[in-house]
Image (cartoon, rainbow, N blue to C red; front, side, top):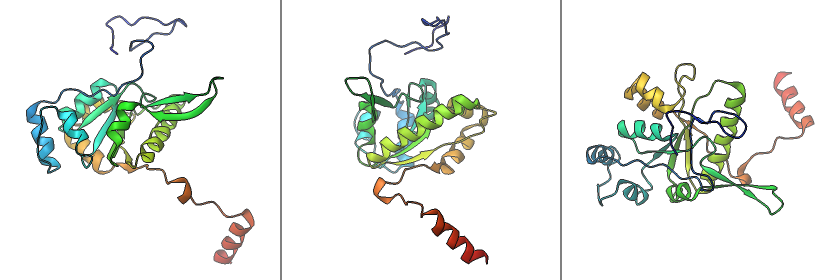
Length: 219
């Protein structure tokens, strides 16, 4: 998965901004983390730094939140700001569609890497691209809902990090343009988007019941 200097076109004639191997399952992108940044992260979450590989240490400590961005540069930016940040390949890159033999969809499941990271009820912050185009925005919102639901099934608390979509599209753009302090504030103000379990979802009362309640309160 990389961004070529000269973007090729696919079989439909559409320019491919990013290129990856075909027939390969999506992977979670986890950049190497320098010792100095690792030490800052360990101090921030008051967890002793042990072992030799940062992401193995993260797996051993589900109490440490992880940010999931979109595209490898976002994970590098988040790590540079001293926050554990991995990334997926596009807004759909965190899940796989499950299909029957006849090709009909049976829903989605987390990619294996992300499922392992989610174990233990970890808090996950989603920081997917903030597109302003209506169609693209709807696509990202739908992908976010699917991903949040799958993570919640693993016991995760899921939050969405937001920033000004008119000024910055990706997390890397936001951190570079607005600065690390603005990024920290966005994390603090992140919206909890953890879906309720199906058994806890409240059903709306029948229309007549609603009308009765409104009538009692207004008249």
